[in-house]
Amino acid sequence: MSRRSLGERPGEFARMSSEMNPHENEFTRSVGIEFPAICGAMYPCSNPELVAAASEAGGIGIVQPISLTYVYGYEYREGLRRIRNLTSKPIGVNMLVEGSNATYRKRLDQWMDISLEEGVRFFVTALGNPRWVVDKANQVGGVVYHDVTNAKHAQKALDSGVDGFICVNNRAGGHAGELDPRRLFDEISPLGKPTICAGGVADREGFLEALEIGYLGVQMGTRFIASREAAAHADYKDAIIEAKATDIVLTEKISGVPVAVINTPYIKRIGLKAGWFARKMLQGRRTKHWMRSYYMLVSLFTLKKSTLKGARYREFFQAGKSVQKIDNVMSVAEIYQELRTGG
Image 1 (cartoon, helix red, strand yellow):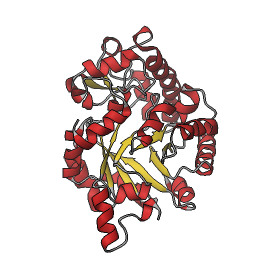
Image 2 (image 1 turned 135 degrees about the vertical axis):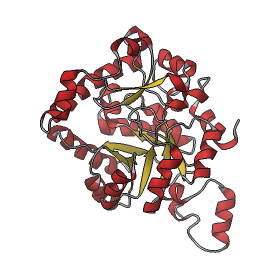
Image 3 (image 1 turned 90 degrees about the vertical axis):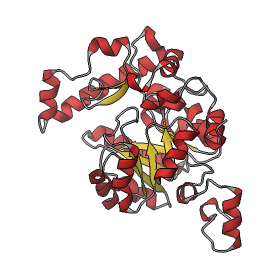
């Protein structure tokens, strides 16, 4: 009996399955995991050991392809197989489907095909139209969830055939949303697809709050950066432990749109707003693509160096408001145990 079918058959078997795993729900069944907590894809923090540890602990780790290849130096298929050597449990892959760059889009197609060939069946899409990912995943029974920050974007993704939504709220790290978790759920849930809460969760209390709102699970990032398996520099982990929610600010200096980071001395020195030239370029119908490409190249290098070299390079640390609940470095297994039982 496949894990996908657990709990879907009527009668005694379904009841026994639910009793064996009280965390089982529509999301866990569709993805084939035990516990509804995702270790979200993070550039540049998603090293293979972190991804594998999250899946091995009963949740699911998400591969960030640029991290895997550019930051950690793996040929893509080799990187997936490295993760497979560490866990036989399901993993996912993040596809940033914004398609303004033809070279990048070609690489995305290659990554998608290799992922399917290597047995990946769960995909998290973001920043564009996910239709082509959905079409390829559907051919092999794959599942696609799309990052959304509002109902407008969610409806577009739904029209493209996605199976569910990663609801990115205003407490998330990286490209955070504007709505709080409850308001975002109220906007997205009428669309009738499973929802995952992304932002502000670092412990069992936050996990239970998300379930109480109505989400089927959570996606966490910041908590996993402060883990033993994460390859992030100790300076980065220490900054997360020392920071409070009020230390999280939004900067336009990474991508031209607000990104949540820790307000370190370096961030205070360079400021939060894009310069006048960058703002002008981002407003143009043609020039915005050039400006975004420039930002992407600069941020790829800067974030990579900051993450791996720490304050010796620059204190440029992405994080969400869940830093408020993080006061130590734990193993990934311990993080999942805390989510399950509170200790």
